[in-house]
Image (cartoon, rainbow, N blue to C red; front, side):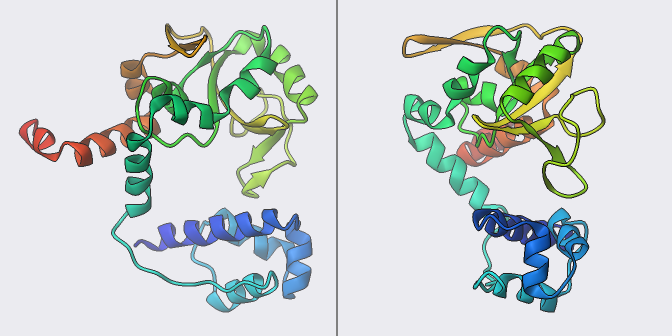
Length: 238
């Protein structure tokens, strides 16, 4: 495991436990006898933090950090295998898509990324609803985000909030709204789509082949799943 990977795992665990307890970085810092800046640096995952400080931060939440070993990326492989074993309709219900899509109303958009791949049957994890939105609709998108109490992801702090919600402003196109997390690809024109139907509802999605060509993250997940699900076929293509 690389140092950066371990730093990211600690950052994710610390942020998750802090937010679960509704603690701000400042409050956790006070409980652990350190500074808000130190907490922010650890949660960014830029470098491996000093372990005594990490111990103090978790202890302030009545927790302790445990070390385990596992095959590389075993958790991701297990998650994709679990998704592949479940009925597609059940996997789609778990995404909570309709909660956000119904509230987007007439804002022009299409589903893309891992969300589009999942709707087309790919057993990939989906952490947030992913849509494509045209730049010329950004004012309407901003208005919707404000109405939905959207908070934008702050790359430097590693949390939501503290930066303007407008997509024109620098920063990740990623927001936490009252309806769930939403990620956007801003584009000049919406990409070509196909319609997939599940139950009595249709979804406009970017075709799977286009997702693989334009979204490195989703493409990597799909390649990883195919490699492990059909290793012999993968070997023959090399």
